[in-house]
Amino acid sequence: MTSYKTALITGASSGIGAAFAETLAHAGSDLILVARSEGKLRELASRLTSETGRNIQVIAADLSKPECGAKLRKAVDALELSVDLLINNAGFGTTGAFEKQDPAREAEEIRLNASAVVDLSHAFLPPMLDAKHGAIINVASSAAFQPMPYFAVYAATKAFVYSFSDALWAEVRDRGVHVMAVCPGPVDTAFFEATGVHNLRKKVPKGSMVTAQFVVDAALDGLDARQRLVVPGGMTKIGAAASSVIPRSILTRVVGRLMRR
Ligand SMILES: NC(=O)c1ccc[n+]([C@@H]2O[C@H](COP(=O)([O-])OP(=O)(O)OC[C@H]3O[C@@H](n4cnc5c(N)ncnc54)[C@H](OP(=O)(O)O)[C@@H]3O)[C@@H](O)[C@H]2O)c1
Image (cartoon, rainbow, N blue to C red; front, side):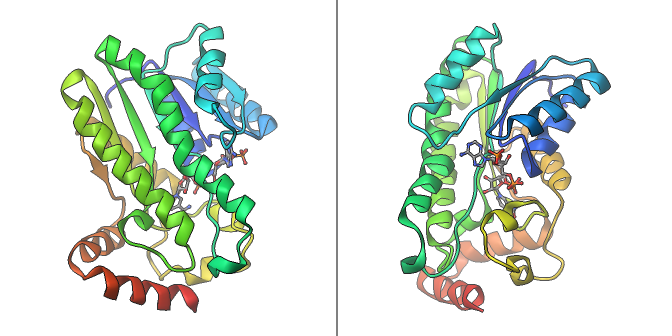
């Protein structure tokens, strides 16, 4: 595996972010773990420090707040660390009929899933470019590949992340920095419970749910191979391929029917 000295992982208190932390610490990286749940981050940091001897730091932050990137960069500078792998992973989804959603919660979702990815890239990309070394992994979703009725805002935030990620990839690819999007389908994490919707897991097609570790292994293999996009899992790859050939109006209506059930 390509080695990175210090990885900053957002949403490291749970699910995919925690699996990135586990894998990278054991592969020899120092870590900066970011999320709101300081207790969970400290518990993970102390276990990983004793298992690996790496320098694992914790910064508790709400990344849906304005200027989160600049604030985080200041906190990282105060630790005298420099980040050569940024993993923009924190995120959540709202689901259900659009008119029934809480506008404040959806605004928070846009700020966390989309704005924070831009803000953190502004904060941590320039030193990587100066050093001609580094990488950014943006955790988007297979929801990025088509509009999703009843998951409308979530899918739109992930389409934003995928598009932004690709554009940045093209801008910096010849300057020593790699930018990559990861677009998983359903992953067995607390994501489903965080939506607040009872039994959302039941809508997941049989056999398509993967583990957080599976996503992380695919992402880190993809990073080694300098891939622009990683779509973990066979069924998700088939879905992504279908989205690229089926007319958007048909696809959106089919997805709407599946999501409404
Ligand atoms: N699970 C899936 O099916 C799936 C599929 C495709 C893509 N994804 C994407 O994968 C990423 C990780 O999700 P997951 O599946 O691992 O879900 P998860 O277990 O619910 O983890 C979400 C992480 O985001 C953090 N977070 C939430 N709000 C935050 C805020 N305002 N500020 C800072 N951190 C915040 C949470 O920590 P705190 O609550 O401690 O802040 C937690 O660490 C998300 O971007 C999600 O959209 C998930």
